[in-house]
Image 1 (cartoon, rainbow, N blue to C red):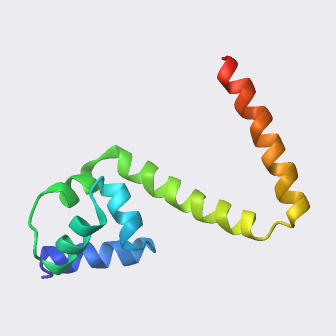
Image 2 (cartoon, one colour; image 1 turned 120 degrees about the horizontal axis):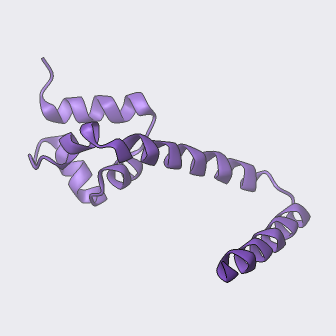
Length: 97
């Protein structure tokens, strides 16, 4: 049976996440995440993530952000300007509501 530190690393890798992303999901600092994975910290926060309904939502958010970054990185300068203009317009509309 795996110890908790090894299990946390295994789960993070299974999800395809880096430590920063797993820390975001667990609502801890990257340092705390590193400590959990090295076995230096035994706080129960990583365990609550498995039971927390928000965890799946946060994983989806991280995945969506990755996809968005890839899309934005592939845009031409002109396309990026158009996108920025559209986001600015949308932000103004949302601010009114």
